[in-house]
Amino acid sequence: MSDFFGLFKNASDAERRAAGTVVFEAGEPGTKMYVVRKGTVDIRVEGKTVETVGAGGVIGEMAMVAKEPRSATAIVMTDAELVPIDQHCFVFLVQQTPYFALQVMQTMATRLRAMNERG
Image 1 (cartoon, helix red, strand yellow):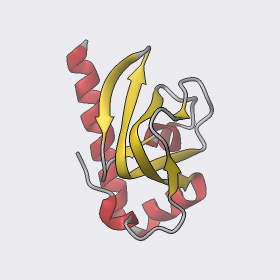
Image 2 (cartoon, rainbow, N blue to C red; image 1 turned 60 degrees about the vertical axis):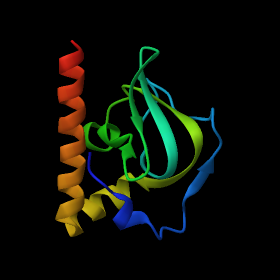
Image 3 (spheres, rainbow, N blue to C red; image 1 turned 180 degrees about the horizontal axis):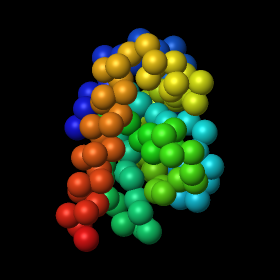
């Protein structure tokens, strides 16, 4: 999995989330993605955990690209710090930092392969 930590380790707008907190739910409009700076977040599809994302990973990136409702629910498993990235910031990062765009694409491709393998 890609490591987004380097780009966001000094971000001042990190949000602290306690274990058990729902970050977003499937079906909601996606207005932000998040970089996990500390802690872990479970990604659940139809109630089943499909991935646990730790520090350096991202969640919610599909909503930034597809502009469709969330396809998964994200729940904080251990106290976490999440750096929010809204659509404006996302577009800026894609334009100005090709490495960021590649990391997002690699993350999406890895998750798609994993979902296909699960059947």
